[in-house]
Length: 190
Image (cartoon, rainbow, N blue to C red; front, side, top):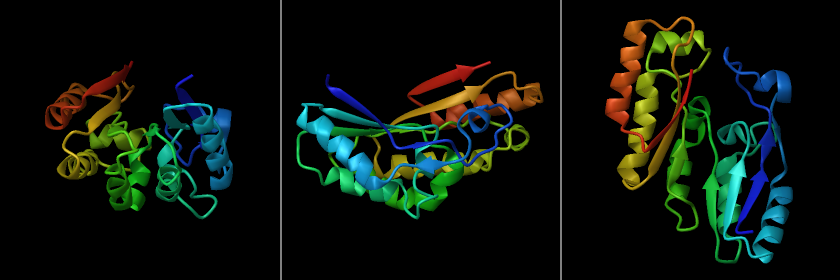
């Protein structure tokens, strides 16, 4: 009764080789900001203390309707009430488009200092084969940008171990990335 989970979009803009989201949910379909605000207001009025924004990829929210998650978060933080907002998983490929604004908004007292950003692999070659559109260094730079402004941020990431083209060197690249990132929690898929 204390958590309101609100789906903000379905589908995604990716084409990752390991994922069936595109087949199951198709391409991105974002819900209008006013619909989300209405659902959030209802939840807050019912006594919810946490609003969890969820989707297959929160960071591409709104790209299909000429907005983005930063505009949504800005409006949600202005709602009256005693509640916190938790942003669900967002893919690193879309982060450069919104990163500066997102870091600024993450400083708002109503937003949990929690970032779920999936690395998937610590090898650029493996990431390219997975059809991920970022490099390991770009990922690390994004994490460091958040940590520089919000040192207490809780970082969660996802890793795939044993991807079909992954070599021992690629695996050790993933281990090296972990040592640099030191995430707070990791989802591991094999």
